[in-house]
Length: 165
Image (cartoon, rainbow, N blue to C red; front, side):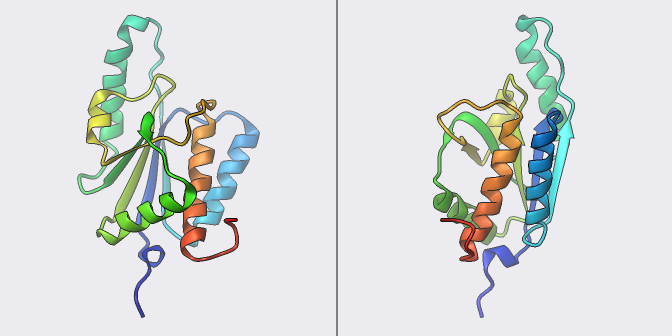
């Protein structure tokens, strides 16, 4: 019997700048973390964003945030940055992409969600894949919930389970 990608237990790590403040978002995120546990080890690494008090310092602050982000990534990780101009997938394509990454032998898949000011060029240049969740604009804190739901959906699709319709 062939080993399926979802049986490989590739670790998924989400690095996100900022804490989730809204109770309803925390509850949704916790629900999808719970649902994902049977499929994959999952870690969420929340980093404190640096407050930008002077717009002229944005690039410098993004570089400081980049150092925090990079310190939490293993050199062998497959890195996906969430970016406005990134590639868009439908849910089935996203599931196939995760399967492809897993089958390549990667042991850790890292998604990076920047602050409301985005990510530094240094972090974006490290990405193996730049991902956009939509052409629409979402509140920054919704991104984590939407991403977790789509990762969960990807596993359900690959296992031919009924969640995805």
